[in-house]
Length: 181
Image (cartoon, rainbow, N blue to C red; front, top):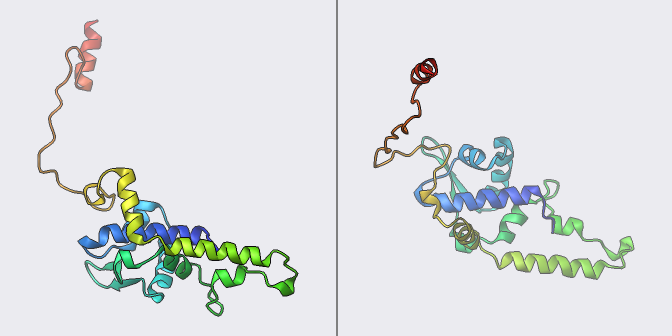
């Protein structure tokens, strides 16, 4: 199995969707802004993820992407394999990378076993596990953290800052203080 930047970005984007989709569909532009991933790159990734049946899209105002099934039912292997599919013949990276005995690979069995171990591990990790890990590391559920694309109003107005004694609070006060010295 190949693990490239493509699969890493797909995992990041899918985790983002899983965390935010309870509040409605998630736009690619908001994912792009939050994670610094090119919008055109995300469009290509989400096309592969949609073709694999992992996400669904909604068009129009308020549209975006949502999970096609529960985050608990989507594994990291599902996302990785969908994102790493090769367009020519839809051959998975795992099949393309495996060397055959015909090619003289004396370590063929080793690499097949390694690939199988990696795939089994990734099948044991769900998208819900990634969401839980993210929230545990950051300590705050994502719904409470601000996003660059959406500004939230504060329920309580910000506390006014009072100038400290002896410190000018404007350019004019600074000029007055400087002239008096």
